[in-house]
Image (tube, rainbow, N blue to C red; front, top):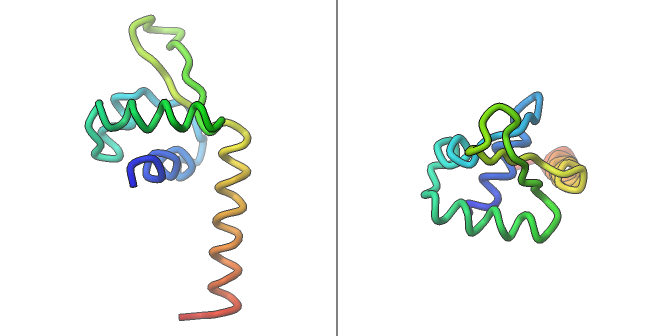
Length: 88
């Protein structure tokens, strides 16, 4: 699931710093076409923000929104809680 992979890639970074579309494609092994399609959807859902790079006007940077961080925090809290209450 490329969209989930993209969100998790950002979330896993300790700094949650912005990432270029190219770097995100490399990290998630998604093609540029696939990535852009999912990035557009994640933007519409309020999970990603697209910004220009202050050092290189040709590059587009992406970052998680506060909504995405909160949603992923809750997701992992639920996963951990289920593991504690119902271990495999």
